[in-house]
Length: 134
Image (cartoon, rainbow, N blue to C red; front, side, top):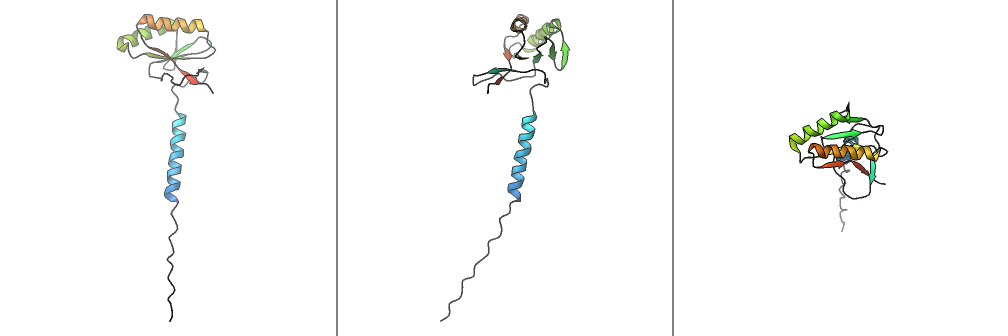
């Protein structure tokens, strides 16, 4: 008696193209997501913090450089103009708050003076943008 040899079916080769597409999409996503910055001033080195939570940056932001210059919306302004900007933000919505992006080497007395001006203008919530310590 003769037994028939069982026919072995060849499995089709697995298609790797969908996996490669997903990997490239993830790569592009991380490239785009990591390029976003809350502000564009590269001359400001942020102070470091060790706590788990940091205040988020909003669109009400003032950049304070080490040399004492102040920028709002990419435009350099003086302290009197900053005071009127704080007053304007307080009139719009005083509870919303303001984010200060201060250089870590900035004079502490100048920073305290600016926070005091914001509070005097009616801004209740003043946040300091920091980065997590390594």
